[in-house]
Length: 307
Picture 1 (cartoon, rainbow, N blue to C red):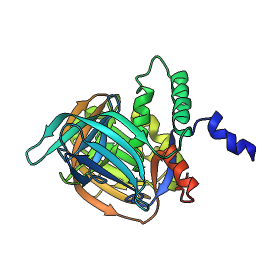
Picture 2: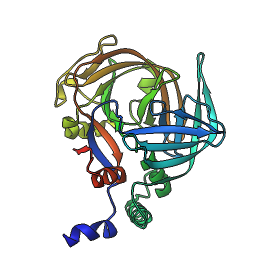
Picture 3: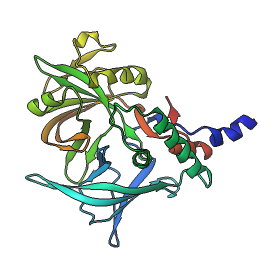
């Protein structure tokens, strides 16, 4: 018993929790506040880059808006990101606004556990950092965890040409509702980036939470392409329009036409139009959220199912 009581004070919480959530997530709402105005952006904001940490939205909320995350059931404030407008992306029909994250704080843990846990996590990140890898600073990771208070769905992205085939997991995705775009933010080192930019088409498979292990195994394909579709540990079939192989057991299939892409910091940010959508099954989807968010929900008896 006493070990459970002292554990949070000697060992940091996990940065991330892998959870099962029915899509679209409704546990947390996100609201932008600026100049006495506010707008719900739960389905209209996404991460466009990790280094620097950049948030994209269809709204122009001025120079210094605040992004709040609240528990949908109780209205309790869970976390805040303070944003600074840096740029806009203009297309033929709409525009998006890019915001750097200047600061952030969460309220999922009480005082003094909140700053103590952050210190433990930051110390661990610095201790395990490789000098040969490009990684966010600990303060940016803490801010990113706040952005993950809205649980982020995990999909498998399929790319297929006669000379290149691949499938890999992503969670830096999501709709930018007011613009009609669907976005992907892919690390600039991904092996399929040139092909995606050339073909301008991909297919997404929304993955059941029960397939976590095979999804995580495919992370290796961010660095190396897939040799053969038949080598996968699950069945695939052609997508509706593009005939790109997708996961037969997926909850939903979306085909995306890429209309715009640009480098933003450590990532390439893709803006896409949904060409087709097949809703195949109703079940919990694989999601990621912040570890301190899951701890908050566990204390209140409403934890997400962990995978």
